[in-house]
Length: 241
Ligand SMILES: [Zn+2]
Image (cartoon, rainbow, N blue to C red):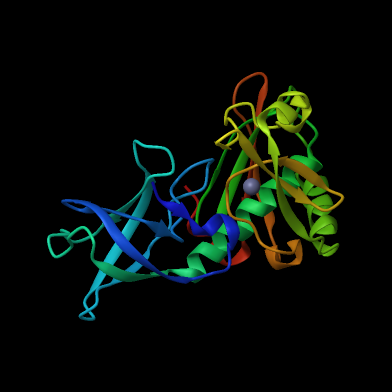
């Protein structure tokens, strides 16, 4: 099991850890700040530094087979690693911060468009949510409402509730396609003060003013009851897929 340090502090960028298990191209640590791909948010990238100063590039991070097991995908073979070895890790912070900004922005989008969310994804500089909606929302109106929310610079906080408390309040679960993360009978609720409250295991900015400028690049019809809303940061216009 890996201690998930990013859950307690999404702003920490460096950590010390011990190697638990190694396979070619993969390493599991006893603790990590690297967020594993999940809930529509991509896995973190960064660097692991060995005691002798050698650096290993982490090209992606995934969930392992066991609960809370995080697998760091290494760009080079990990043959130099052995269980018990101490090392330090460092995130590609600028990328992670962009992912946190976009991920948090999708919480706001789900508060602007009042409809069940059927899917979503975050990329570096862009993101999208799918809504169970028969009519397309008006692009400029959504963009204006989103900008007005961001300007409020509300705080983002989280707290844990029990699974039975969540089950008693099913309206909190907005995303029908993603089950909320559960951890030993507890579920993490993320609250954008006065704007949004839902279970989420991702990483978020502390205040929504950090999201900055964002625009709706497209509203697409994806089936009779499905509307896909795409968001981008201005500087990332070339990266959308
Ligand atoms: Zn979230």
